[in-house]
Amino acid sequence: QSALTQPASVSGSPGQSITISCTATSSGVGGFTYVSWYQQHPGKAPKLIIFDVTNRPSGVSYRFSGSKSGNTASLTISGLQAEDEADYYCCSYISGSNLHVLFGGGTKLTVL
Amino acid sequence: EVLLVESGGALVQPGGSVRLSCAASGFTFSSYWMHWVRQSPGKGLVWVSRINRDGRGTTYADSVKGRFTISRDNAKNTLYLQMTSLRAEDTAVYYCARDQGLPDYWGQGTLVAVSS
Image (tube, rainbow over all chains, first blue to last red):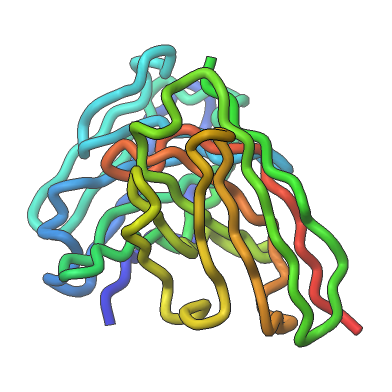
């Protein structure tokens, strides 16, 4: 069974940097070539903040960055701000003929 | 501006059916694959289904295969999700999302509640 594992919660103080990990627990996770990250505030729709592992969509703050090493992708938020408090989800493909999409369980970021 | 607006959410009895719609604007709808993703109350995002540009290619999560049908009408710029044999565990906010490798733009969601 393929899965993307994220920490349930992370926290940081304003101005600090935090990193959220996303670990693929099966080699079947699309080779981890495609990884996206989404930010979701309570009661709101998810918003794409990173695509193709490292790319930021237009309009997304430079404070958000993505990386990958082996079977772990990471989202780093630098210069934490109060409005960064939200849930964050990673996403990738399960490789195979059907190319099912898989989301991580989500990480709650608390800005102290 | 890309805009996706879901509708059709309802309170449905177990075993019932409902059809969700997603009206798209601000982009060439027929050029993009599309997704449905759901989120149960207080839980994380779960992918449900995807459809290719002409509607002839579809993929489903195992949890909904055989019960849900994704479709699209490119002339109406609208995506659909027909949901049948609904169960309590299908209760969720259902989002439609545009595909750009993986989902990029998302609608605001529509709530389907399955309860007697």
